Image (cartoon, rainbow, N blue to C red; front, side):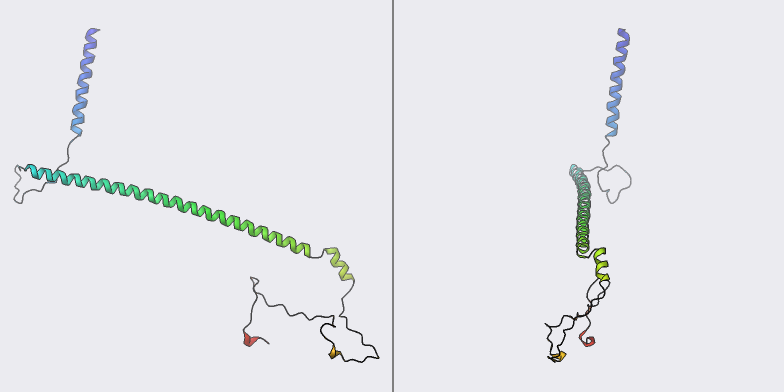
Amino acid sequence: MAVRNTLLNHEVSRLREALVNEKKKRKRGKALLLEAPSQYDGGAVFWSPQKVQEARDQQAQKDANEKALQHQKEEDQLRREAQKAEKARMLEERKRTKAVAKELRFEAQAQKELRKLANKPSRSQQIVSKSKGKSKAITPQISEDEEEPQEELSEEDSVLEIAAPTPARSRRNRNINLPERYRD
């Protein structure tokens, strides 16, 4: 058992080393943004430490710009989602307002109909009034000893009132006013 334990410990340590080596391989660096000399013929090129530092700084700046751009895109996406949610909320608010207004109009119309029905004589009252016959205009009786012409009667003495014709109405129940030149 001691031998088996030693072998297993040795195997575990080797596997850990392999894992560390694999992680090191994955951490390959990016190529720096160094410009090749104008007369580059494919040979070895030596860079000064200052040029290498400048290239690293340029790479860091490029990475920072990409990160800022990604951050800006995320913020824009969040802003668009917030606007979309606000628009949906406003649309829902408008729908609710319209529904309430429609309900109010419906109730007002129902109340109007109820008032109209309350003011309208019932069917039995209409039959009674029709059975009495047509109402005739009452004209004042002129006694024989008073012979006044009818022209002298004032509007107050006459019972019959002349109603003005109702104005013409459009389909939307609005008054139609004729121009002055067409009026009588």
